[in-house]
Amino acid sequence: MTSRPTLDQANRIIMAGLEKGHALGLKPLSIAVLDAGGHLVAFQREDGASMLRLQIASAKAYGALALGVSSRAIAAMAAERPSFVASLGHLATEGIVPAPGGILIADNSGALIGAVGVTGDISDNDELCALAGVEASGLKIFK
Image 1 (spheres, rainbow, N blue to C red):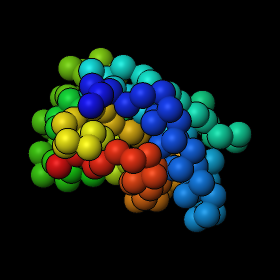
Image 2: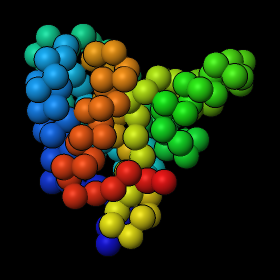
Image 3: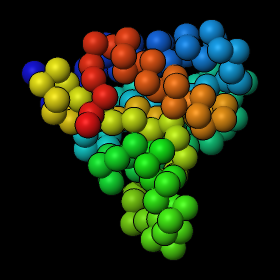
């Protein structure tokens, strides 16, 4: 067991996520993998991606870690309780982006070990790439 994604696992998540984006013909993606404490393990930004993508990808993953749910679930919270979710941005040191693309990562025993955040295309496509990355890494989606 590991307490965080290894660098090799993080890089596999990123590469598989980018491959999924290429297969779908998406805009340039950026992918961040964080450990369970919210620390960056690995990041890639494709050529042509805009400059805030590190912060956006990290905030999708960080928000998922901070609230214990996917960033898709945070988006649903924002629709139901916009003031609450808006107030979290001031509390979260790395920010929170309430849009799909942030997925919690578990090891093979089901323990939370980190999160991945993807940005660059529409959020539903970002999430597809995050899911593909975790699936290809040998790790699991945290439930």
